[in-house]
Length: 486
Ligand code: C2E
Ligand code: CA
Ligand code: CA
Image (cartoon, rainbow, N blue to C red; front, side, top):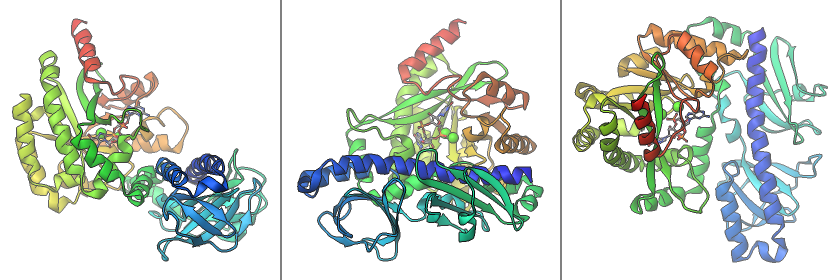
């Protein structure tokens, strides 16, 4: 019972966090666009600005200028007009909602939120896409004052939204567990509904089942970004241009052995130098490159950069371990074995100093990857599952890939020592990894306490801001020099 309530609350909260972030982007977009005024909005400059706003608003599918019930011009359609139909309701903050608008593609329905003459377009259920992995669950974001759903996923009976609650609450209704949270900032609320008995039976089952649940507690934001970025279209072109211009470099985050406190390895993390342009982090450009099929170009560049930097690092610390993030698609490509051999030759490092991190979220096709993985392992390269706990790997899947390490996702590490349900899940995940004889790395350690709890749970390695942020090569060398003196 207790855990069901917490779970429902976390689910509603996740939905509201997204909704609030969307509200924030809508507000910023509306201020900028309304500032243009009628004359300028649909001019070339106006459209350029709208496109820039669109690009920088990760949660909005597009923005535009409205006249009457029609989009007069927009970031996605230029001068093309789109009739939207009459609005459905007006929020208490005088935004006007249309909850079923089709634009370029007649099959896709959007929510259009209009403030003044500016309109922001939101994908109807993308924001809640993290819910569909658990059948029987319902989640909705609704207008608090109107009690009207704006976006929903799964079954959300309207009468539950209409229940007379005055603030955030959890209650039971006909065996269902219902959690409601109210936005402190916007006229919105989120509701999550768990079907009767569903959770208790799930929790009773093996740890296998806990993993998908854990995903729900966590954020599916990267999936969302992939989708949004795909619809933007131009990011892959920007990435290819950046590769040509050599705009990528690596930063290194120390990996600590918990028993000794020593830096025994580094994880290479990619950075895009965009000068004065808006920063784009790997959480955005990596999924975009994966989607567009350019990830192998990025991985090849990362190998080159590691090869360059590793010589200097190894001069100070010959045993240093290097962890490189690779994508599922990389492991589907047999040529990667050649690339690894070259990397080892150029950097002088033995294969056993190399770990590949594959994230659990972007599933590797085990059949396609098996030969490549076996050859890599035969060379001595180690394999780690990244973001462990928030994906869907079954134990059978892990066994097939012959993993050496799991990296417990920071979502779980950061829950340690708190009262949350997630913290209990974290402990279970660690126990499970130990049962499987896997080495464990806790990532995202931000406090001494988290590090100590990990150590007491028998976790061997840790990474996180507490031990060291991702740092440029020079800073890493400096750190290694001072560690050597100690
Ligand atoms: P990841 O592999 O899970 O990397 C860990 C991310 O967590 C990094 O973000 C790191 O800066 C951040 N982090 C580390 N310690 C802490 C902490 O204590 N607290 C918090 N809140 N965060 C911490 P970053 O560098 O933005 O990378 C994001 C993701 O992008 C990576 O997640 C990885 O999946 C991907 N990525 C980065 N570089 C590459 C690359 O070269 N190739 C590929 N394929 N993916 C990459
Ligand atoms: Ca990683
Ligand atoms: Ca991770």
